[in-house]
Image (cartoon, rainbow, N blue to C red; front, top):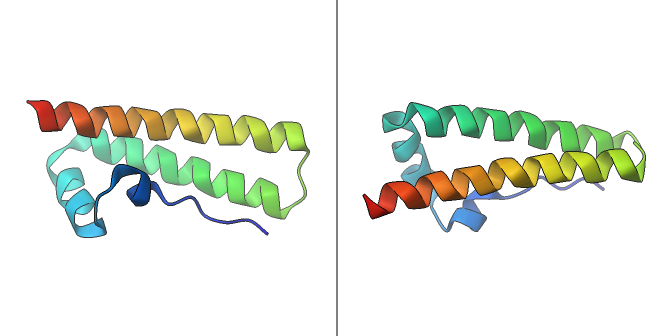
Length: 79
């Protein structure tokens, strides 16, 4: 059964705190939109019985976007 990935848990942020960051940071907002689209693609592939290779590739792409978001958020905390 497909399970939506919890980005906010990985960031250790509440939804409210993350939304506040997104409102003031257009790049973070764009990254988040791309992440949500990729997460939906992963869920669709998992639910539709896509090949393991395809699901793995999509998960890697989602992970890359998550890593970009984490790096971006942490960069903002240090400045």
